Length: 585
Image 1 (tube, rainbow, N blue to C red):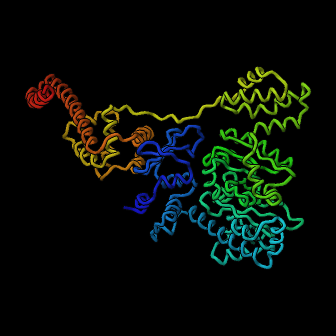
Image 2 (image 1 turned 120 degrees about the horizontal axis):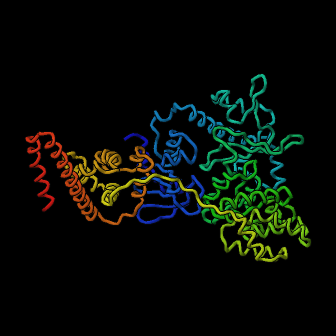
Image 3 (image 1 turned 180 degrees about the vertical axis):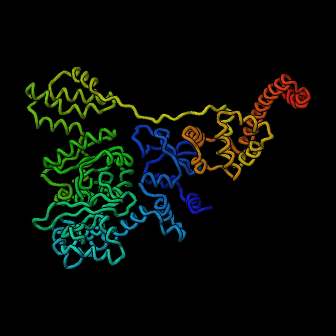
């Protein structure tokens, strides 16, 4: 057994995938959830714990636990193996530690450099050079212990300290430049990209540090927030700050709290709102919303109360609605940011604001009333045009009717007119499903395939019979439209218990779809019943093979007689008679 096969036998695929996708048990043999690889409202993503395999019947994605980590984390095969081995405490063979893949080597180097940088920044914060940064934290009422919990640090102002340390650790100039931690001057020398800034480490969903956000502390330093550029391990549109810690709380509470900045997340955490996340120096993206939807169905938007924050909240609502998220808006009085509100009014007051956040439409309607004079006909039209883009994304007719009644009341217009407008402008969308070709199998073929996948005893009993080319059961299968599939299945079955995760690599799309359906079908028979069902299927194959052989012999005898080869025709007549006697018996 190679190391990858050994690793798959040790890890629990339900535990691995369940850390990314909320799964519910369905039947005896599978778990189900929303697919992380395409947008859907009804779950079609299945995980089979026994076969150690996942399959989405919506988009066609499927594979073993290693493939899932590769696809979800966007890592190489070797990196996926290393990650799983570390997670489950499986020692890596020495030869696996030296990756030959240049991309994997670079990613490994970048992750190591970010870990080193985080330690250096934290040490700088505690050193005399970090006095100004510590004073800023005190001003923001952020205790050093809390700052340490979030890995907050300080980048020294000199501009060479981190580069020197990374070089001393053996990293090449090219690796250091590609890390995003350093810039290159015209003369080719490297310098620290983050200088004199309060540093916030940014993690991926697995908890690895992949980037930094740096806040300026000194007058004249621009921009106010400097973020890591895109690298081989970091794409800002795909990452949410603090999600690696917030996801567990999100699953428990059924919501994520979306704030604007790093300090806001820390303030919310201090107040007990553990499910807070923030975009990483960019406006909220559809990709980030898709990631959020995997962990909770509801988002509470709690952006800064200024005009820029309100505008950002408006744009976020549109993106969140596209992913069918339930949205509430939390507003804080006094013009305070979330972390300032917590420091001023206390944790309980902040939690109360989050818990009592208003429906997004109420908030939008309030914005419309502030912007437009709804006492005039022109103002009513402007308000309606402002609100319709959000309303038309509402899929539930009952919710649209409720919104129509409320909006009609606010604007002083006829509810029937608004409902008609909603009907004409509502976006009618259906989830796109991948068209997969199908295979035409007899019922007995489907039953036996399922039994082969579910029962090692059936495999041991039936596979030798079907592999014997002198048996009628084998002859019957050779004329099946699914004979190529049977050949692949029987080759695997001859080696031992059938594992779909190994077989899947050999299958075409139609075969994968069929076999995945059979894998995830509930098992209804115990071993004794399974053996009886398998025997019945083999008997049907034998009967079908006998009929096919009789027809073939008749055709052959007719051809021989027409060509004058009577002796040869006579020689095979005995076999024909024997088969016909069996058929009549």
